[in-house]
Length: 468
Image 1: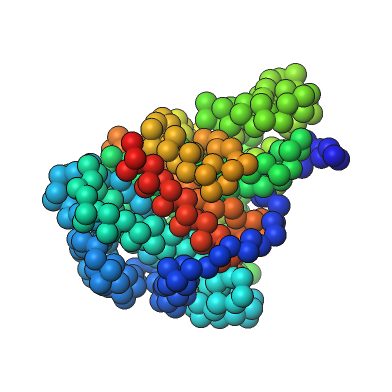
Image 2: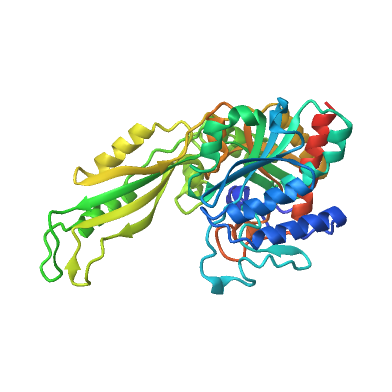
């Protein structure tokens, strides 16, 4: 069998090969799940506009026999739960969490089918939110619905809940942030499964059929900053001062972009590399297991450059998302310039030290203020729920391996980890590189077989808990 290079191995960890569609049998329940996802995609539920989809989905769950709890139900703040038993039953609660909001569709001309059409083809369901995160919501709800009859015939020792939250795409203050602050006692979560990793194939060079699932146990935190340069007065474009506001801000941003940053291999990332190296074996595996050793760094550091996928795992990152001025004429120099920075911080980063270094870099004439931030949280230690999910994945995907990972983005999960709740991030199916690249981009879609397999994994997980 042909060996692939270390760079291919590294690239595949986050951007796995596309795989052939699976010809899974589609029963009536799966037809209903497909129709539900198509319907949900048709709601243009941008952040702050979730009431319509929330009302529809909560009514759907109630009609199917689940117990609904509305935490709030206005257009800017809609959160609800749908449970086997009422929330006030006092049972420990296994919570499947998803968010209702989506990002905008961008340029509509880039879409093969309209972004909110919910188009169903022979193999896929198309539209904004198909993966992030309405597809996962349908997997979770469909799995819970499979156990309504059992819950009525047998008094289960636990509750099972779908938790729908809003506002995730804009830092969750009205969604997971609000719920985790005010309703933990009512929800009584024993564990929460939210979004995070997924399954990958073709990752291990020595066994190209091996499927690897990354289950996130920690994630980066978000810190959104406003940088501002200000001068005492405006000026004419023909007679600029030496350091007018725009020039001052641009020079400061260039300093930030050129600043050398410290690399950090935390325990989660090192464990991930160790387990992947163990699966690979041989010299390649040994290097992967000890990728942080200085002796190997001359050979592997190029895989951690800014344009490489592993960069975000070992560095605090920031991007400049907006640069703006007050409304002035084309020949008028504005007296104020602002930039928005989206910073993503590794677990364990000291926020005060991070900001102090940034202020030292840009200098005293640039003011920095915090727009918003997500909580930092300790990693979740893999426990019996992790092991049960691992077992469930192995049942549906027999030739698979699960690995705990650091999720290099930010989700709702840390709001609950910050409260001491075990939280694991996983979309329990195999998502190809091509499909993952459509998230927050054009032509977002999910394969019907992936939707079905996700339902199977969640259902198998619930069976394992019942049989314990």
